[in-house]
Image (cartoon, rainbow, N blue to C red; front, side, top):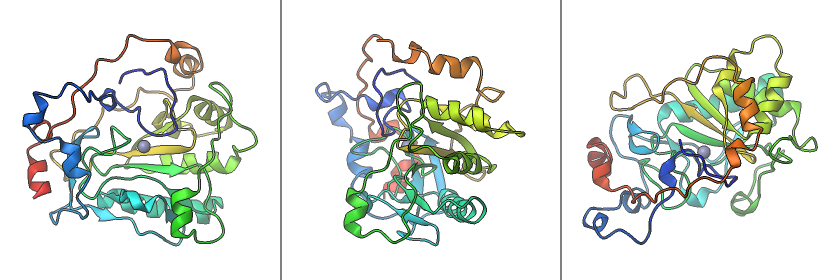
Length: 290
Ligand SMILES: [Zn+2]
């Protein structure tokens, strides 16, 4: 992963592939720009559910739509049509919402972007979220009522971070810590991305079992939401997992680095990467678009 010295509240920064050249596409123009296809398809591919490729270069067959409302969640920004995922992801969000409410007293999840109906690259935002295995969950708890369509477009989440090194003690609660612990506790979760002070707060808060902390990864952005990434489903043969996180709880030297100036030092400008073309994605993604 590349380091970029700009913190953003959205998940733009999960790979180097987010920086695209707009100007130098003469060669690329001969092939189809994948996001223009995946970004405009309205429904899932009527195929057996499968994730194909990698989190930043892939697509989704047989996607399921997360309902706008459930017993313990509300989907936000519905106009984006990104509340789709592999059935494993949708089941995960539903289960986390229910468990967090029942067992930890979290009022309910506000769910941000999952994926497009057929996954793939997006016209705006994320570099990842392409397999239907990534989900953004807001730090703002659900209100005690159902948001209107308009509120779901306009209400903002809250940041739980004060600055690069400190949590915002006015917005961060033990409820957030419990929610993140629960979110990491399921076997199907590969990683959860949070801003460094959040990881710091969790390292301090955790008592007893610290195994779950290994999955909580410090990263740029992710102050208004956290990002859950599931492992490849067993029956998705064409899905490629990331390597496992380093062993240990990540609360030592790794966190120390994240809380230093190291991650924010000016780097050489990232080489612009051309837009992903359809031919850059796994072959199976052509069938997913049909
Ligand atoms: Zn995300």
